[in-house]
Image 1 (cartoon, rainbow, N blue to C red):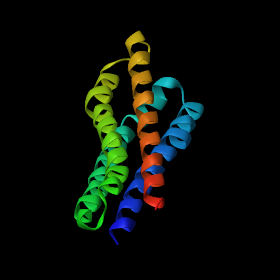
Image 2 (cartoon, rainbow, N blue to C red):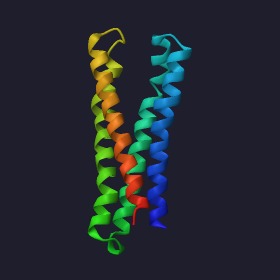
Image 3 (cartoon, rainbow, N blue to C red):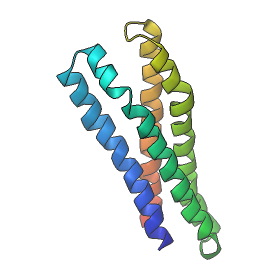
Image 4 (spheres, helix red, strand yellow):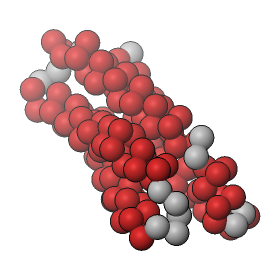
Length: 138
């Protein structure tokens, strides 16, 4: 049961990243002018990061609850990538996102912070792919 909870938490998180990164955000920028797209996306990202944080705690909680039945290397294989993804999500939510929300899209600093957000997001995506791989490997 805990394996299912872990897999669902990671899958929901991974799905939200794919959906927001490859569907919602590009669609907003294709549909609206830059300022309007940013205004549309502004309330999406705090929720996006909150969902990731909740999923991380559920996934890590499932590993911790099942730790007595798991070998040490399996715990690391499951919790390690989720911990990395949690750290990158926290950095995105509490360091990068506030900076992006302060800046105008025309400010040169906006592009640098946006690049940082994209790199953190890519790292989160990769770490969650490793977590899924860890969950299906025996």
